[in-house]
Length: 226
Image 1 (cartoon, rainbow, N blue to C red):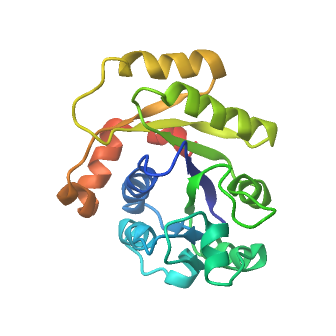
Image 2 (image 1 turned 135 degrees about the horizontal axis):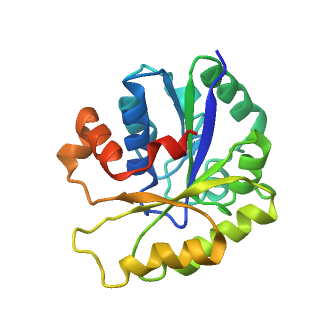
């Protein structure tokens, strides 16, 4: 089995990558076998476990997230703190196992596209290495036009194909600038806006069916895995 795969990055840390990734995984996992990866996770977080839960499958945690670190820092800094090194060969091996056993594969990065994984490699280098198209998650609020366009420019400089961008709202009231932000990004970049995932409460995020319903309602899923 060889899967179609994509890489999810954010315009910053904490913009909602895991919620969006989990929503996409939940929506597709009722129909096909969806593999998940978070190659590097820092801060002792539970993002990898949330992705596994969204998939409805018992993926081995060491394949889903081969590098997990306790301190909240970039993978490079966190690895250095533990006197470890992020290895592309280890990620490659885990990626091959998960991809071979899945029909669709969602790989989520740590932080933004230029976050360092080692002294020499960034998340962008990993995306290029894995030869995956990119889905960008951004906040819809003030500042997102600049942050999203910078991420797009960084991806294009490395010839990374871009599927589109998704907004993830972390607060319920929409800011006054939100209606213009998506249009401004599309106009400046030509990259498609694939929807806005609204602010979701903890019970919805923890409920696979409810999360899938939110993804189907608010995201252009057919374009994400076209």
